[in-house]
Image 1 (cartoon, rainbow, N blue to C red):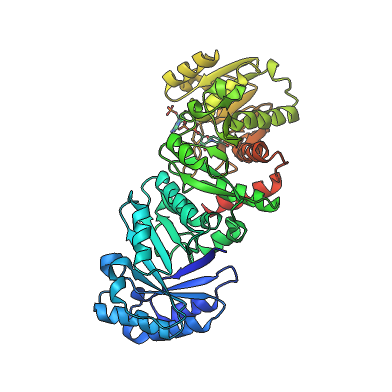
Image 2 (image 1 turned 90 degrees about the vertical axis):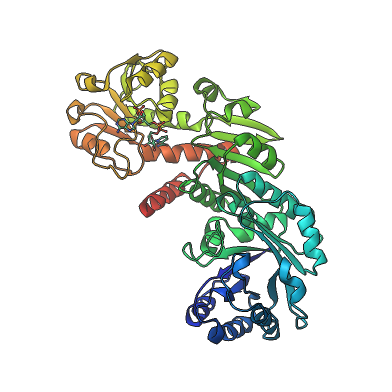
Amino acid sequence: MTKLCVSLTHSSYDELTTSIDRLPECVDAIELRLDLLHDFRSDWQRCVRHAAQKTEHTTIVTNRPTREGGHFEGEESLRLKSLRRSAELGADYVDIELESCSRLGVLSAGTGRIVSYHNYDRTPDDLDLIYDRLLDAGADVPKVAVKANDITDSARILQMLDKYSSHTDLIALAMGEEGQCTRILAPKFGAFLSFCSVDPYHTSAPGQVSYRQMEKMYRFDRIGPDTQIFGVIANPVAHSMSPAIHNAAFAEKDMNAVYLPLKVADPASFLDYFQQYDLRGLSVTIPHKETVVPLMDELDELSKRIGAVNTIDIRDNKRFGSNTDAAAALGVLENAARTADMLPLAKREVLLVGAGGAARALAHVLADKVGRLVISNRTHARAVSLAEDVDAETCKLEAVEEMSPDILINTTSVGMHPNVDQMPVPVGMLQPDMVVFDAVYNPIQTRLLETAEETGCTTASGFEWFVSQAASQFETWTEESAPRSLMADVVKRELNKR
Ligand code: NAP
């Protein structure tokens, strides 16, 4: 079973031992980074002794020199001595760099040797050769830690684990945001351990995830060879709420699945590399919604019409693209229209403000459903272009106050955090009998929605839309009903953190 190993980066004996004493059950191993101690000479032996006494954890001792990306600046003989002595004090493993391994000497019986190769710049081509060199150097556990500059570098690390982890205990990980998936998926590929941090502020390598997130969000202990992989492909991806939402939903339904944030530059090569590994479903967001369209084996009608895919369902090695954005937005709007007694939509006049991605999804889904669709946008030429695509009318943004639509939809980012006081249209155009739908979901209650409610309008929020499209994705992939209220709670919680 792959161990969850917390890398302890504290600088003093007190901090380090307090941290060790508070570790939860989910942590199987601890790595002491002796090179990070401020007062190395006085503290290191006490730290190793304290850690080694805790038999519930596997103890790994590392004392990385600056030339290998660590912080130890003292004499090499002292550094090597600290590792040998750590073995005598009861460390289960010491970590020694490939280049220094021959100088380490004999360790006490019972202590294993992690021989490590680091590359902080890139993932080299010759991973097999590096693996052989680590074994030849006498590694009980070979360790490869390299920088992923592209998500496909992570795929090569996973391939390495897949190939060798049944032969030897092996640690292989890719550093950086593009490499984060190798840390989370380590148990699926049989790694000896995966490193995590005490919290998001004390990481020892880029891309490390805290043990709380590993345990609570990714359910690390549940991941194994049969775990299905889901994720969001985006660039950037760090602020996506989707991993929190979908992992919570998988946990609620007790599914053997994990959902990852995947920083992808090129969806085609990502799919080529990852599809072989139980990749079951993807959310697609900026900037890839359009570029993935030609990569699909099949498209649903809506995504074909819009020319954008936000959901990929992979079955029997075939990729099905759909657009739950558009379908969910229509559902949310119809609910509000029903409440306002405005169905059928065919009798209604709709003003759609905006001409970006959200507007595009809504324009396509509304064009043949509503009585009259008028599009207005800051950059009028974009409104004209979208209107031509869907056969709608346009109105200059300066002139929208003269309109009195039944339904007003804002798909601009106006009013979005942090500019929460901004309104996309003049207050004066709101009328009590209108339906007002705001795509913005951060904040949940936008100034537009607040003003519309005060005016007596029926409202629909971007929050409802966001939750609904995520629920539809979950249902597309799993064919089970989504735990919608749980998903809504997670979105609220995530928004509160921002
Ligand atoms: P986008 O493609 O970048 O389009 C942005 C739109 O906002 C464009 O029409 C742009 O006008 C307009 N805009 C930006 N700043 C403006 C300003 N200061 N004044 C007037 N218009 C301005 O973005 P998007 O993907 O369509 O997203 C738009 C909003 O919808 C965001 O708040 C997003 O979070 C939200 N959204 C919500 C959901 C959901 O599930 N609830 C889904 C998708 C999007 P120009 O053409 O003139 O630049």
